[in-house]
Length: 228
Image (cartoon, rainbow, N blue to C red; front, side, top):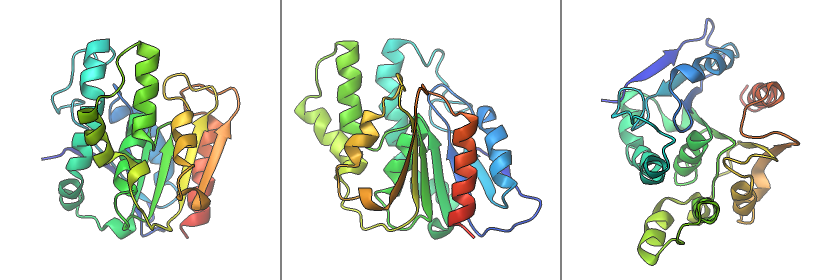
């Protein structure tokens, strides 16, 4: 059973529901403020618990290097694996569901969206849609060995960059140009694929790994424009 927090708008003026995936080491509670603002536009918003967070085998210290390196990708891959179970439990239809994720949640949202032609839209905030590129970048910074062949095979299964998607749904990427936690390079690498021509990509000068007021307002305006 996947626990979740649901925000119901006062007036249902949109048929879509937004699923919000939070970042590494974060919680459902940290997403409620933004969720309430999205709901004010008329969307129902659902924030599910993610593996190894909240009540789902939460880790003692998400930012311990050994724990981070062991569980970061496990959280992403296992959340993607339970996608259909989550949609069923939430009683949603993918064609009326917008996926939104920030940081780790952005990895998850892109992983689900680009492997499935059904979702209504995607918002990825300070995440990555090029898993192998980002993991190689993490390993260089940590002075770890590169991915071996077995690890690469696992990553290719989930990496959005390797999905042959024919999606023509609204997609929004937002990223701080000075993001030192999840560098913007992962998204730039993804845009080298044939997906790039229908993605709105907003970049923010001098912004690190955070969601600014400007980014939040751009999300609200984009949703209002694309989902009447």
